[in-house]
Length: 417
Image (cartoon, rainbow, N blue to C red; front, side, top):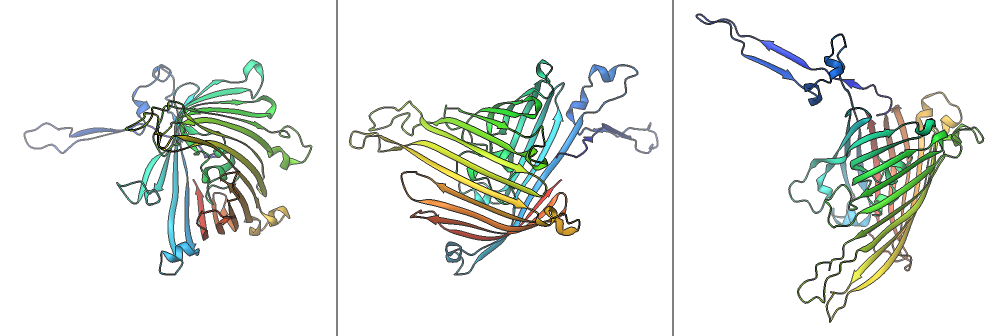
């Protein structure tokens, strides 16, 4: 995590011998080497050179833990529990991140995702906590201070990496409370397998981020031949000045676009079908995120739109294949404020804050049905890396939506380490 000192690991060798037995010479029973880093087996020439002090690679380990107690009071939960509200303690996520250099200007990152498979209705091998990869990529910082312009740099990534905008929104909208509006409503996952390019702009203007990924997300394997392209431009209009005060320096404006396709379910034809369908189905998204962050006040507004091609019929003479283009949109606004800190209080009350979030998701613009998701809560930070919150969350169907209503009271915990 940011601010932590790297952990340096050295090779440790231990040798021991057994006592001498009559008629035998001393016997060295075992010699073993504890190798925490495989890279220390082959030392670079600079280390082997006489007079050069040994250098060990920097190994950085960090993580975040999300846990909660929840009590559901909606009708669906009561119906499944004899008319009573349901409750449980839950470890929602444990992200463990490992970072390490991979030579000059290169590094690797691996983040494991510890999750509960009981929430995955398709799994059959185990109902409990399991480990999967969230991020695992090679990063190559191939250009720094381009043309002598300070801060103008570029890097490439390859592997399981961040998608175009979800991770950026999570830096403003706390993930321990809930997923972002885009991920909750199936726009795209927070991570996927592919390649990415990140260009940092000079004079603190912002950055440009582009990806090419499989499309299904990090939780499933690639399932068709198509690849998805995405790009984001983040502008920080006041980062270099004090025109609107210190708070405005953290203001960002991030328009983004996502263009993809999925395979037709009739791509290979079949018995009784009139033929194959080689063309892909449209899977496009676009939107903009605006946010500003300060230890005392964080706000954000997000808008996303998606356009998808859906199929109907059986691709037969009696039931011809049909296609329909469906457009939906999501809007989200949130605020996180520490009122006593804003007032200048120096006591422990300055660690107390309020949370509010409102999402509205309309799956199909041609229909009235939509869903509203709200969070209202109170949180406290006993340390700079631990947060507890008491919050109420509600998913409410509106105007004929078939989505079941959900009402949940949470005690959330987030621990950074």
